[in-house]
Image (cartoon, rainbow, N blue to C red; front, side, top):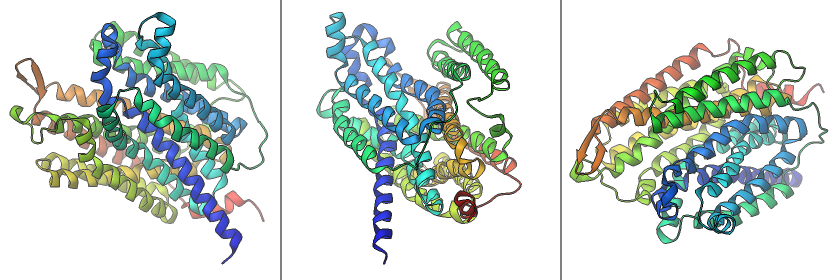
Length: 490
């Protein structure tokens, strides 16, 4: 066996482990504070109304910066931009841990706005997903790209499940800010490993950043997601929803007009003429909606007290995380299977299969959720479908755009998934709110409410399946077919 080939293979595995760990940690940090939200009320009693923003601001900023980070990676080199983002993320983690001390030093009292500032900076870390995908495409042999992308993609869902368990355990043995301290040193190690191990091909900066387009896109997306948060909190007829949604439409319309006229747009119009890109983005939206409808409903379902008709009556989020592990395990296993299949048959076939399996998973969840075995079966099916979808989405982008545009194209795909992930919980909560029962001062969701929410999830999965079939490119190729293109003429 060729020693140099062994060295290269080991190096690829190490790089993949580092990039997958980055993706896992990005979602872990987003979710780890969920168990700590009630405890934060004690530290910020006068600002308790802002506590939900600890989660929202992370996703809002992440959605805005992801396509921009992807574009910067295309312009200046993905490794260079990745290291810069990681350093900023590391500072934000430390700031989150010391946020109370910093606010007391600045204002004489704890302020949640200092924590929100550092959580917003942490949201920039969502851009590491698209940079990791780009590094894999640029540095791995084409035949290994689908599998590597599949493993990284699976971390989006796995990180959520692990975040509930890890965050719940950390909160149970310490304070909520200990969660930031717990991840700082591992992330520092990943930063050093990334700087040392990742070798990017020779690269010279090209093009310029479309600042007006970046501003209009970022502002439009931010206001759209802000309108969802405000609508859920203040009501769908409130000015808190209407004003930002109207401004969002205006800014995004202006973005489309500007992009048609600038010489180097942040998103080339050709990307929106590709059936593969359009299909992947539409599918990403529905995958995000369905995946986060599950993440939103299952914890509440599992923690509904048995005296109120709950079937499980779990008492803390650590137990919830353990009950949701089958989903994470299935996602991790089937990501590898999906990557191998995408290489052989093309990613769109895997995407269609994944959407169909997700639909079956929702049918199972609707009818089989009364005990741990039934719930495990339903979650396993859902996790398998989610994995195949997550793997195939980015691989469809690989098959549908040139390397020079991959960063922004994959960033847009991640953006649509994040938007779906923001819409899903809002829809689920709205459906649950129509089926409640009062127990003293508590208002709890009924089992029928959860069934209705999962039925809506089934509907969205079927819409995503139909869209994937309709928007499937007339001519598809497997990733193996792209090897010659990536190598260029001999």
